[in-house]
Length: 235
Image (tube, rainbow, N blue to C red):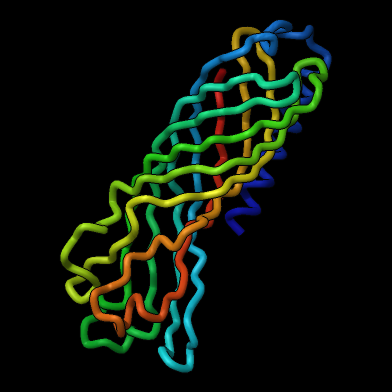
């Protein structure tokens, strides 16, 4: 439901901007002639975890995730490879939090055993190809596709304690792939580019507990980020 709200808000904003700008004089007519240009972005995100559980008949596990909103901020460096193709580096910081609910532990004598709050701050480093259409007046739609490296400052990977001591651990280094859409809007003094993209983990981000039969991590075969980013770029 939240992700549908992201999409609806994105397309509503684009439609309103299009009708407001459609009859105006062409702005920044030589902007796309630059070989290299720079910018920055601000945005919000809604991150979830994709969970694949092992045989539930063995572990009898019931695990769910409660995602929340977070924010993203970063820099942009774009190299024009062709009039319709660019390579972008977008290093930045991403912050969000999630609650992992271990429903099968709700009957535990210690209620805190059934929930782990995961607050994460990442160094997010995407390398993205941008496929643009030809420019139409002050607009230029595009597609995005690429991969990213995430360094999780809050991973707890090196912590000697695990869930038996209340510490949920994740891998520090992770890799993602990203796909998205957006539109360049040429204004009087800069280019404004809203975009929406999906971000999906490639590797398993879970750091398993020391006990191979842990009630928290043993039932999980794969845990990886699955998120939606809504970014507003200024170039």
